[in-house]
Structures are given as structure tokens and as C-alpha cells.
Length: 498
Image 1 (cartoon, rainbow, N blue to C red):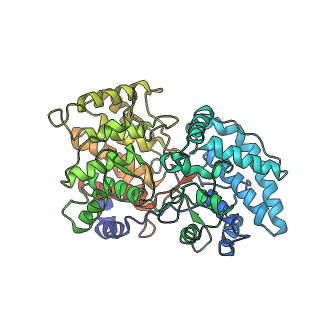
Image 2 (tube, rainbow, N blue to C red):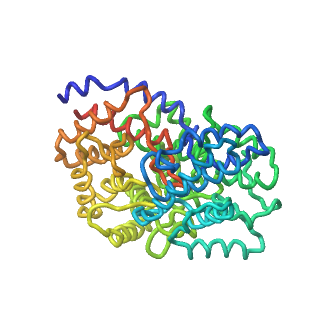
Image 3 (cartoon, rainbow, N blue to C red):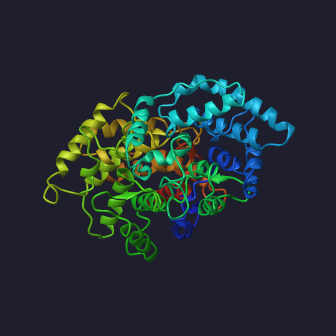
């Protein structure tokens, strides 16, 4: 059966070449939350009227909007935004019934918010603002319990108290729509591409009050044929970094390949020795997570980069993703640890101390002895698959417990998935981790890998691997190329060991 699977696999080289040719586009797929904000512009900008129709077609039977797999913060924030948009722009009698069904859905989901380990981005301020709007329209919606409210209030207060009011120096600008009374037409908000921090909803919030022709053009370029709008765009750096990371893990690519070298040159041109890189060329704030993964790729490609940027993100007991973030990210620290494995003390005397700090942080946050959650992804498989490799040789107990959790949670269809069903993305992460372990220790049951490969093979119905929104922003979204890269890389690696 192993040989049958090996011979049945698609022409992976062709799929890799197609993927490489698309990197940098950064497609994140349409979401209800973003589409709702753009729909609200349609009374003054008729080119956005298709967004309202998109919302009508994408309401679920229970009255909610959001990602297909239920994450309660995502469903609530998406539903609030969509019902407000329909109320403001809908002209069908059925739109009132849609709004009524949305009210019912909100009362159902509010009781399950505590089931989500992580909130969506800026949930306290976004949910509060949207709830106030909904109540002003006479909707029967609940007041929502929120976490981290004090931390957000502190960040907002610090910004507003500043005489310079430099929005672009804080990540709050990404969620500008949640602070409608606090920005003015005179504030410096826009990037050169016409976006406010690559956020369609933040850009739309500005356009609801003042005209900005380049901002309108930016949004026009994001609407798909059905009227839907991407979650955040363009995420060119993120798209390249994470896609190449998985392809490299599987041994699919080399830095000498002309397409790969062009992409690495693109990353190096955006690299800051002190700060690293950001998610996108038009995202004004760098972060440690993308920077760590980018550092690995650039060192692999032979570029003269160092770990100096670590000092910028170092905190007392961990490393932050962004400065002034409300709560730390486990995955960012795991990724930073993985990057440090390519350095030694002779190259940088700080390396050993940084490694120890991260390992202690991970031990302190090991609440259940099996797996971690993370703030950037709805599935624990994302962070724990990376942790298996990052921790091996530094804390084998932690590494082995993550591995065991992955092995014991494979689904009957051969895949892995945390929110009720298997997905190709999560399965790709798990298979890559298992193969890395297999190459080093050689004790993974081949039937487990075969079953995972069979699941991925069966889900390649077309030339493109299907994706499901699992990444956490202001809603759940899908970075399509990285998600496909994880699955495709796993298939490629399986082909070489089956």
C-alpha cells in the first residue's frame, strides 16, 4: 500500500513551480468581517454594492457569519459587522429577517466565548464599537464579555496622550475602525499603496468620514468577482517567508534555484538588522515571528544576517511579537528558539541566554503537559508541530510530550484537525514534524505517515489544495499560499520516505 500511495501522488514538482510563481501575491481569501465594512461604503461608492450581495449569500443557517469552522469570537465579530452593513445598505424585505436571525445567533454564541483560548485581534475595542452601533439601531444584541480590556485601554490612552499621535508607530492603527472618535482627517494614517496598515476595514472606516482617492483605489483592487473582500492585503513578506519555510523543511527547494533566489533577494531588500521584517511591505511595524522565520531563510541562502534584532523584542521573561502587545505569543517564542539553533555562542555570546529564557518561558506556560495554544492560530497543531523540532535537544521532555499529543490525536481519516474536522493545513504541519523526528530518531510508525499522506492525497481534488480559515486576525482568515505550502511540502517529504 505504501508503494501504491507513492505512485499515485500528483506531479509535485509542477505544483511546487506553480506555488513559487504565485508567492508574494499574499491572497488571504474573502471574509465576512472585511466585506461588511466595504459594503457600508456602497451608499457613497456604488462600485462596492456587490459586497452587500456577498453578505446575503454567505450567512449561515443559524444566522451567523464567519469562518466555516466555528471560532466564537470570529462568529460574533463577523456577525455584528454583517448585520450592521445589511441594515445600512440592504433594500430587500428579507434583509430584516436576516438581521433578526443574526440577533438570535449572537445570543447563542455569547455564552461560548470563554471556549476560545484566544480572542480575535483587538476584540475588546472592535466588539465594543460594533455593539454600540447595533444598539443605536435598536438591535437586540448582548453586551459582550471581553478579556485584556485594561491592556487595550492602556495602549489607547498612551497613544491619545501623546502630543505627536503617531498612529503608524503602534499596532492600534491596524484596528482603526474600533476607535472612530479618536482619529482625524489630519492624522498620518495611509501607506503608499492607499491602505491603512493593509487593513480593508480600517481603510473603509476612514472613507466613511472623508474621501481619499488612493484609499478607494486600494479597496477596489481587493474585491473579488463575487463581491467579497480579503482579510488583509497584500501580505507579500508573510506569503513568501512562510511558504518557503515549509518547502525548505521538506527539502523541496534549494537557495540556488532562480525563482527561490529572486524571492530571497526580495526578503533581504526588506530586512532590517535591528528590527527584522514586518508582515508586509506596507505594514509599518516589524515583528519577531516573521523576522525569525525570515532570518532562517536568509542564513540558508547565504546572506550576511545576524540575530541582533532579538534584543529589540526581548522582555524580562520572554520575547514579544510586537512591542506593547497585550499578551505574549507562544508560537513567536518557539519560532525564535528554532532560529537560534542555527547560531552558537562563538558567533553571538547572547545566544545561550536567549535560548534558556525561551525554554523557561515555554515550561512556565505548559499548563496541560501536552500542547500549547497560540494567539495567532486557532489550531494548536500550528505551534506544537514547530515546537517538536525547536525543543529537541534543549528540552526533550517538552518535545516528546508535543510529539505524543500529535500522534495520539490523528483522526480516523488519517488527517489532523482541532476544530472538529481534519484539514490539509493542519495535517501538513503534523506530518512535517513527524518526518523531522523520524529522520533524527527513526521511531515513527510508517502507517501513521501513510494514513496522513492518504488523507492529503484524497483532498487534492484539483491542482490546488483546499484551505480553511484558521489564522487569527480581526477574524479568522487563510493565508492561502502558506497553507497550501505546508500540505504540499508534507506530500513531497512523504514521497521520499515511503
